[in-house]
Length: 71
Image (tube, rainbow, N blue to C red; front, side):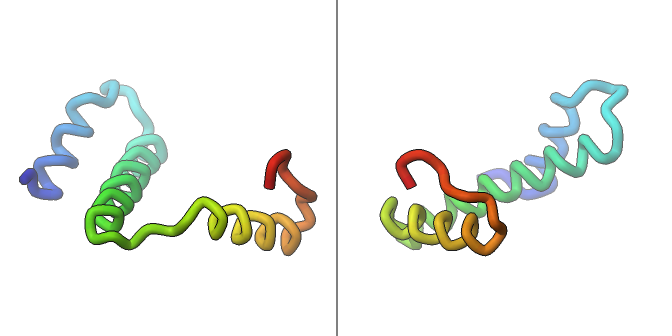
């Protein structure tokens, strides 16, 4: 298993040399979020599709965004 430092080093190696600090941080945050989600799924910490739809609907209503088709 790769360490966090190894994963970050690989990510930085794949990024263009002229990438902005904001872009680098955004990519790092995205990768960290995905890895955290994978770890949670491996531990069985899953949320059902119906629960995701219910949470999204509540969030949209609280932010006055209306609804999304199928939600």
